[in-house]
Length: 191
Image 1 (tube, rainbow, N blue to C red):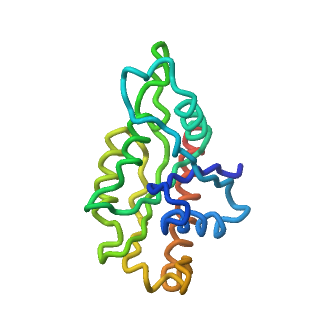
Image 2: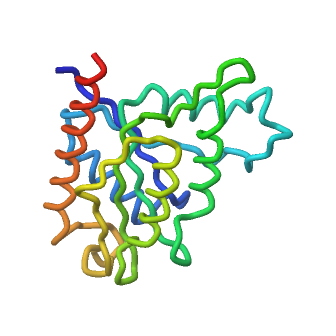
Image 3: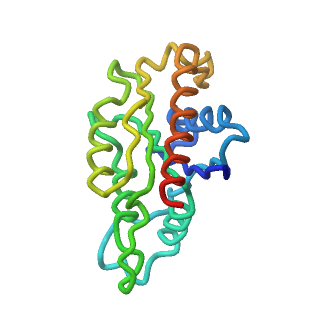
């Protein structure tokens, strides 16, 4: 069976964000079981149909990276009970046809997993519900079980603010294994 390729989409642009650290922890846990890369989309312009075609270079780059992946793993914080605007902007660009001639959208049918860590008690649960509703409506193949919500991040970081994943590591491991299996099953169905 081929090694799956996963692109990680972190809903925060901050370099040391907890959700970026969570994505890097997932990458470490997966090791050689999957090709895993973080999507860099900080340079995306705000979505605007006036600049949609010709497609901006940054948009083409992220579309290609997502298109070439076997699955997309979202790591989202929760801002005001919702996922961040930068993530919505990325999804808006990814939801559009790749050209005026080709109506293909890179998210359609793509396996997706969702995780998140936050300071609050919900562990990004509300943000994840909103995100799943959106990506489901865009025809992504969402792995709803297991999802990972990590509340109260202070119990999972060291004195320097680095994520240590004390009690949540096993849940991340479980989700990582489940997502690889989920992707492989989808790939087998399309062979």
